[in-house]
Image 1: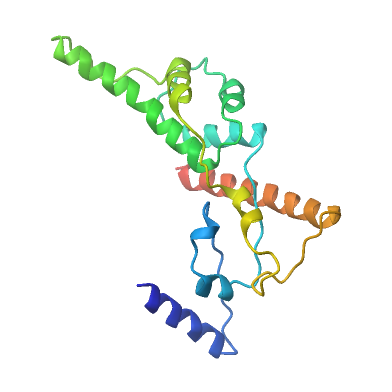
Image 2: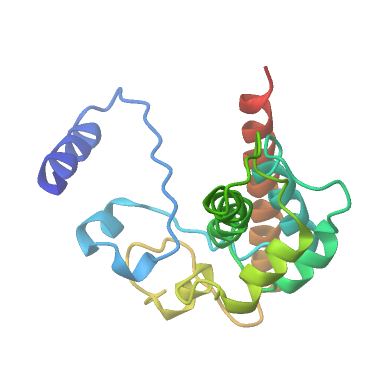
Length: 187
């Protein structure tokens, strides 16, 4: 599959009239093949979301789920320091298992319930007590060779304007992704 992908990609570069933009994202840039990295002319580190962004991501993930009204998303986001959007999705998924387990336990005891209870604050706290954030996340870009030809820009430790622009771009991208996901879920 990789070979077919690469040959199709090479076809884009041979047609001067082709107007194609490839946008890729990964939490594990070090696992990307060098041949793929050479074809990507620019890379940006998006970084992990801050507390406010984690609150918004949690709200988007849980938008259509049955959750208790008194859940403190800010508190949960605070417990998720360093978590990526993917990590937050996994936390929500694991928390949603608790009401299902409770329902199955009740059915084993002979009690019937029409539906599982809503996900609670305690469910999230139980998950977070045993979960870990992604060890290989956006910060891994610092481990890549930034002087290689695939990186058209250069980074210097004192180049604050460049880093500030990347930070603003990353916030814009996260905001747009959240908006697109929200719009896609609206009926």
